[in-house]
Length: 348
Image (tube, rainbow, N blue to C red; front, side):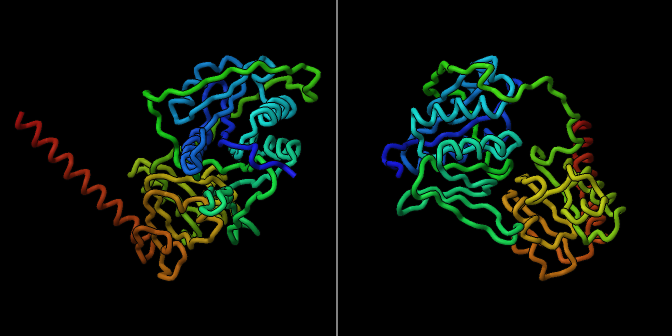
């Protein structure tokens, strides 16, 4: 059995693409910082790639106490064998208590391989992390049984305690130019023959026209729209607010809107400053993807709809009557602002 006392510290495996940190990595640093503070240990970021010296310093500014990074031409492009080998060597040597990975395409491939090699557990697709007050174990919460309930999982007998975390569910770390920390560049012994899969070329896909994860305002439509054309009204309100259009899964499944707009467990997890749910009942699969929004406004004809339980403000009514009134009110506000600007200009 693993000697648990040998393991100490919180590690975040940070991802970068072409020299830029992924948003989920900054989110994990923010959450890792909270966990490390509660345990009274250091937060260490692990970074792999090539020509990434500047990123190592950036991780310190975001909240890491230490950064372990390795540079090699063979690490410039992700490969399962290469990254697994280097990270497992780091873990076996330094013995962190907790290892957090983003549930990205790479993270979902890498996490299981690392946990299997280290003979430890892995909780995938977590939406919440906490430290148990009594025995200081990591409580890892994720949707289970098709999203119909949330399960909290622990790893009592093996280390490190590993998890992948859904992008968009954790609050981003704040950048602090004044922070200092320890940066250690580690030489790695990796050879081409260690990597079974060879990357012939990388094909870049055009980014989706909507970026839900980065949007501060999202207006989403659900079954209450009743018809595909209802998204025209949703889009009009979103544009008026300077936001983007979201959707619940049934409307994506019906082909009314592209999957890039889907919010929820099987879509994108978001935490905007303002989330307006229009005609969305509040199934747990949808709530899992937006319940951490700063402010939630729900519009629904059913006063008993589950969405009202998580909403900060609720409007019971027909969205086809409520939304036009909201847009009209916003137009009036714009007119008032324009009037004040004209008065101020005339007085100069």
